[in-house]
Length: 356
Image (cartoon, rainbow, N blue to C red; front, side, top):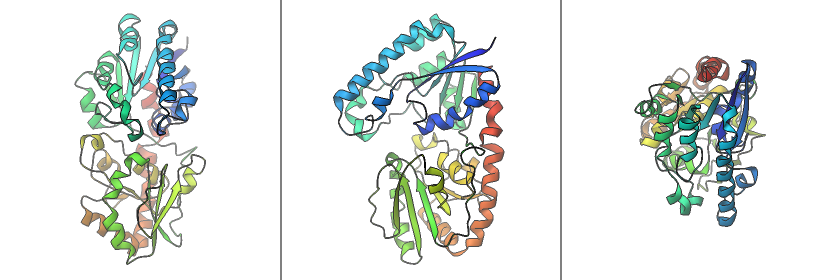
């Protein structure tokens, strides 16, 4: 008899990066392993279209009610599943009643998965007025209720192990066969320094502005920023590209090097190095801060560069602009690191075994 899994996720399928790179790209692997699955999101498509927009209070309120009703309806259907996979949270507001019923009454085997320090307060600026409704205690309870916890790095694992002895480090990975399956031609004419991310993480890049301003007075390069919002930086080198899933790979392939600066804080330590993974999978060397998992992903000078201060950022960028051959050599090793340790192919068995 085939195992049947219910995926309970925050957002509609194929919309959120965390879902796409944590489990959606493994669904075909589950099919191959003889595991059937269904997917249920808290937010529906209608909610997703307004969730991070300014205002729309009534629409967001109604969307929350619809989501809560979907979750409580699980009490009438969850009994038919062998495993329940919860990504990040079951719902953003309210007591953890449904989780308790699933774990303690129905005795369901729950796999709880998260890839950020989700126990720390964090919310989009556009939804700040609703922040007081959000509960962060669900992380501890879900860790306790779960029969297995899946996390993206060792920092998250250390937190989860306080509440559950069965914790698996399941790194965020890249599909190098079907999606990130092209290689950057480093012989491009104009050098492009790139960064990609949402508007909420642009704050990590603002500290680099003095470096960019200094370098653009000496070198001819493009600073390409791929995001959902124009950063509005006053830089002559700046080129803003609005993020688009359909053009994402081709846009990233315009980078010669990719940046991932972070600040030293608990939230940043919980990050799973996704920017670096994306860059390196395409043969684009990553320049990263030595925060969290970054120092495991990047081997300094071999497949990328680690920069610990503004002075190091400036010097490393300067070296890359001056010595293009060095960038070419490092780029050749970048993709291999991802294929060997952070690809869907290399991690497929680890993911499928979560359900055993």
